[in-house]
Length: 238
Image (cartoon, rainbow, N blue to C red; front, side, top):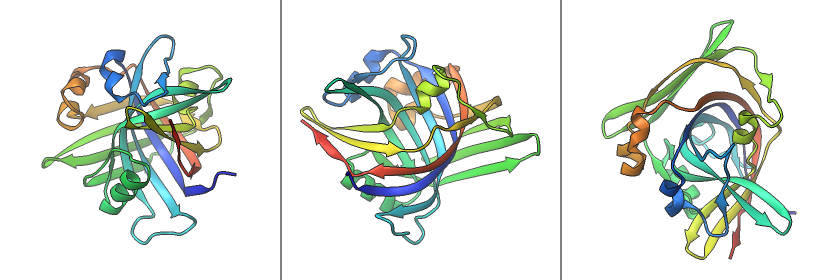
């Protein structure tokens, strides 16, 4: 049995989805994986959420238990024998603590950076306001959503199912190696989004190839309630 590296809760996942030219993602596709498409669309997603009750190898690390993460990710799959494993690959991940960045980049070879972050969750009885912000080069970028207070089950074979039902992480180590790790969580519920605001300097943070997203309307905006999760110890694809 593969051991667990990290446990936590991922809560109030704000997910902003954009269709993108697959050629932009070619340099980021990990070895032995291929792009995973939704109805012939290639998606990148900007995702903000909170880690809660975080434990590393079963131990709470003081001052690193509850925090925000904001990431830009896309979707890949890997054929393991006759089984397709559907996963995500990250362009960049933002957290507020240097130790989190060090551990993730050292152990999982991820692409974390450390920036000041903040969040706001407001329950207005019939609606839920969720926002995440991060400070880059002296200015705050942010995403904010207003959604229905009551989460609903995800519809089978829906776009929401495609976005949330990826249970593997794949990281490009080099041209001939990929890190693979499993993330376990139950099927999530979704809050119907009523409106949203996006103020993100994509090009400044993620590179010129992603700069066009600043002025693009997203294809969809979602808010997942989240759940407890477990991240398994990684292995390598060669």
